[in-house]
Amino acid sequence: MANASKLKGDRIEREIIAIFKQAGLDAKRIDARLGQFGADASHDVDVYKPGRDAPFCGEVKARKVFPKWVTGWLADNDWLAIRADREEPLFILPTRVMIELLGGKND
Image 1 (cartoon, rainbow, N blue to C red):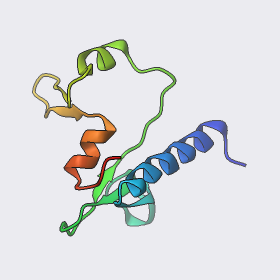
Image 2: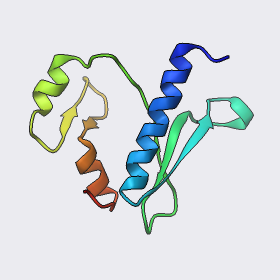
Image 3: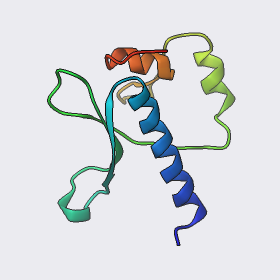
Image 4: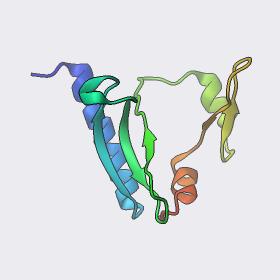
């Protein structure tokens, strides 16, 4: 039997896929771990944007609580960009914005 963390991760991945599918987008769970079966990358979910050949590959993480600075800085904005010194920026965005960018329908 899988441990509690694995079960929680699987549940959250299915929840994320359901959100994309409800928006009319194709999404699939992928069990791609670096080095497993020749995989050269690691991710959890593929999301397919209409008109794009390759899927967007995503990693899903769940935490009991986010750092307050993440939700505080994002607030009512459409996205938050964070960057460490000499690193590429990372973007954090709400579900509604992600769905719109991928061409899905928001309810």
